[in-house]
Image (cartoon, rainbow, N blue to C red):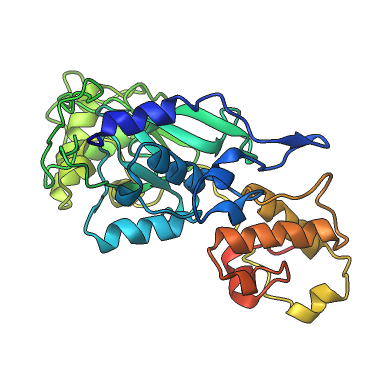
Amino acid sequence: MTVTPESVIKIAKGEVGTHEGYSNGHWNNDQKYSKETPTLGWSNYQAWCATFVSWVAYKAGAANLFPCTASCLTGVSWFKQRGRFSEYPAVGAQVFYGSGGGSHTGLVVAFDANTITTVEGNTNTNGSAEGDGVYLRTRQRRDSYVYGYGYPDYPGGIVSADPKWGATSSGGSSAPSTSSPSVARYKVTIGGLEYGYGAKGSHVTAVGKALVAKGYGKHYAEGPGPSWSDADTLNYADFQRSLGYSGKDADGVPGTSSLKALMGTLPGASKPKPKGYEPFPGAAWFKRNPKSPIVTAMGKRLVAEGCSAYKSGPGSQWTNADRESFRKWQRKLGDAPAYCDGWPGRKQWDALKVPKV
C-alpha cells in the first residue's frame, strides 16, 4: 500500500485525545509511543513529542520517510542531510519549534496563508509547560517559535507552500489551498505592542507617520490612524521591500529588524537587562547534595523543558527528583546512555540556560 500524507495524517488524528500517565498529582510522561516504537523503548518517561511522530510513521508504514528518534534536533539534522527541509509548511510535513528546532515537534495536517494546523504529542492547550497528551493545534505560520519543516519523501509528492519546492499533490482530499490573500491579516507582538491588521494604539499611528515621513504612504486615503488597516500593511510592505526584503518577509507585517529600521528604536516599555545564566558549578558540587537557589532555578528550567520528575517543587535542596529530571534533560539532548546518569555535565548545563539567581 502506497504511503501518502493523508494516510500518515489519519493515524496521527486518531490519537488526538490520548494522554500520558498521571500519578501523585502530575503528568509523568509514561506513554505507549516509546514502548511501541522499535529502538525507542528506552525513551519512556521523558519528553515524547518526537517519539510520537516516529510512532505515527511506524504505524503508517512510513518509517523510512521520517527520522526514528526521541530528539527534535536529531530530526532536524535528518531532514537537512537529505535536502528536505524548508521554512514553508507542507501537508504531512514534520514541523519543528524553538531554537534550532530543538524544543518541540509535530505533524502538519493543513495550512493556509497565515496558520498551520498540526497534531502534536506531549503538548496541551492551556499554556502550561507541562505537556500531557496528543492535541490538534493551530499556530501562526510566522510565529518566531516555528523553526521549519521536514518534508518526508512521499512517493506521490507533497503539497507545499514553498515556491522553490513546487506544490505537488498525491491527490488526497486533505490538501489545503495554498493561495494567499493580497493583503496579510495577522498580528505580531513586538516589545509588548501589537502590529498588523486589527492592532490598535498610538504606536500604530506612530508607525504610520514614520512611513509617510519616509515616503511610504501612498496607500492611505485619509492618513495614518490608531487602527492598523490594510493601507498600513501595504505601505509597510513597500518599506520592507525598500530594505531588500521579499516574499513572506515583505508581507507588510512588521518584524523586529524592519520596525527598528523604521522607528530608530523599538517602541514599547523598556525591559530590565537580563541577568545572564548561571555558570556551571561543577559536577562535584551536585554530588555534595547542595541546598541553593541555583538548584531551584535549574529545576524550573527542567520543568519548562518538559523534563520534570518532580512530585512537588522544585526546591532549593538537591534530591533524587532533581537528578531524575536532569537525566530526562540529558536524554532529550540525545546524549549517549553513558552520559545520561543524571549528574550535570558542563555542556548539558550550558544548554539548559539556567538564569542567574
